[in-house]
Each structure stands twice: as C-alpha cells, then as structure tokens.
Image (tube, rainbow, N blue to C red; front, top):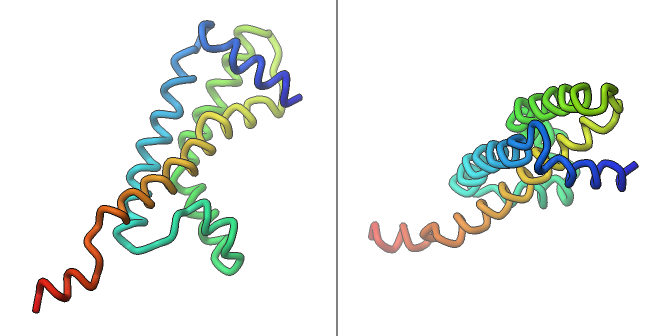
Length: 134
C-alpha cells in the first residue's frame, strides 16, 4: 500500500491538481514557521521532540499540532479525493489520508522543530538581558 501511495504521489507531480504537491507543503511550512517562532519566544522545546519524549504533555502537544495543521490536512484530503475521482474514477479510502500526512503533517512537524531550534540559537540569552539591564 505504501509503495502504491508513493508511486502515485510521484506520478501526480505533472498530472491534474499538481499544484497541491507544492502548495500544501508551503502552507504547512508557513504555519510551522509561525508556530516554531512562537515556541522559541516562549522557551518551549522543539515540538516533535517534545511529543516523542514528554508523555505528560503529549496529549496537549498533539492537540496543539492538530489545531494548527487541521485545515491544511482537511484540504489535502478533499483535494486528493477529488483528484482520485477525476483520474481513477474511484476513491481509495486510506490513500487521501496518507497523502495528507505526507504533504501537510510531516513537513509541519519537521519545519516547526527546525525553526524553533534556529530561532533559539539567535535569541539573546536571558543572562545577557540581565547583564545589559544592569
């Protein structure tokens, strides 16, 4: 199933609705950059890392992730269903969700964490603020 999804995803680059292969990750990236910068400002750890390593806050982090990425995910599913109807005249029930995860959720999680790490490197340390204020 994964092999078929991957081959069909690659095959969709030049077919109908090819714009979504580019647009959906870009929208997910924009949302991820905003969230990653917010995480860095608030001193939070990288999002995906926190989900994987912090079981006490995992459900809240997953809710936050879903709140941020659900519109892109739902749009990706709807566009993929329309694509399948147009091209295959059939809808494979699991495939739109897998495509949405690949095009929206994975880029969001990876980029959010990277932006957080980069932003935290370039933020002045709390000690520097205290020293400058004195």
